[in-house]
Image (cartoon, rainbow, N blue to C red):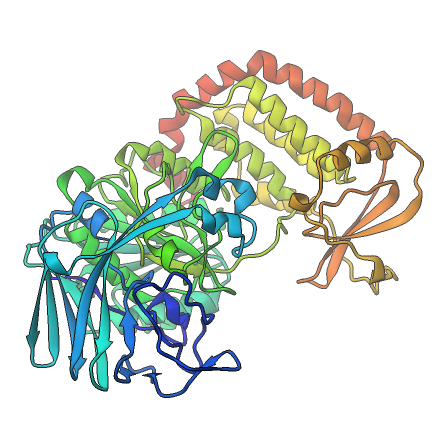
Length: 639
């Protein structure tokens, strides 16, 4: 039985060679020439102008690698090493073999790597750039040859390695040494153990006017899985699309009977994903599913990830059948860069793990398997058991932000499993969120705290409010501070008000308060003095100095700042926040009267929090079953 196929890079998905194989890098593929730590895989290659000599490794995009004699190919990579520690812990698999399809004479060796991660690695100060040396210095591995615990058998054009032990930590991988010119055509990790359960998957996508992404991803699913007789998942997958923009038709997916499209009101991501859940539940009798994958509409998807997920789900132990499976997020522009692999929501702050790791490096492969105390994983790719998706346990209607966080921590008792090779690629950008997001960030953060054992206290909320409001006021973004107060006011109106709020109308009202963008030409702006100093790069005393400058008469007329810049005005009368991606920015001006009004509103809101926080949180907690029920959601979405 297959556990994990060995996969090859694809031009349309990811061509980072070192995420699949370690070797010379074929022409046209990405990956720096980096031999550090390559103790076992020695490349006997001549270098000329930082390029490897031709003829060692040849890959033609047809899942076939030609290797010259005396050269090596290693599978110690993100996609092709085998996470034996997690398979041993979470599944019923009690034996593993690796089958390598090799034409020609080769020597195969087996290795095991166990990783360890220092606490400093996941400190926010280390998460900035992917080349941060401090980050990688905190990764440690123990690499050892396990040939003595393996049995290697050759059958014609196959080398089969039987691993005689299920290790409880780390990853295992093969190294192929070519004794003659050989051709490697892939292989698989397999077991003689029988699956522990039948698995049927409902894949839910929420989309809003991202037709190109959705058509591409669903088209791949249809071609590579649903219409592919060779795919084991073929009869075990159906797709549910919640179209919040109502711009897609069944014809866009060839009217495939396994793809279900539902026009939906624009109730945000939470509304779209919940609509997919409800539709899948309604069809459960005729089209049963054991698990649901929630997936963003703007990702690049590799269908082989879904297949790999299917194999893992079939072998889960009984005590882990209710666990969620999280997918890591990689950057779309830098496809070797892992943006996030699980996170912990602590009431106010979110701690991200393994952020900005370059997964081409050897040591990151095993260290990425070290388990962290996560309590949720994002819905860009997240697997939820059907036993969790119940009529009395649906998401909270938060429109956008914190819906996946809240649902993850609500069901955290079941745990979340992350494993190498299950991921998607997602576009990233600078902090370009509109001012309206201040409202959702604060209100939804409060709602997500409801029912948590260590839910946010009144003092913590006041402290958080102070930081956000002061940050916006000293940057002249008074509308942003107003959205913070409005979010707190709406939360203290209680769940009854929340449950009667029209999400579409409320979102329109909030969006109307966003700043208008203007090009530099429209404002006759000289862009020569633009600033791009990031928050992490400035000393803390700058903020104190800027707060002092804020009360002094203006020295400069305008300060030009990028969206990525810290945005402190330093005695400028106005700030032009420029977004280089849009080629435009918005303009804000110092207003003492407005600042004074917000100062008094801060104290008024503080008094409200002190006297009403505890009772309001209790009211939300008692009402939670109501606004997470199918009955409420069907009214909310007007199904």
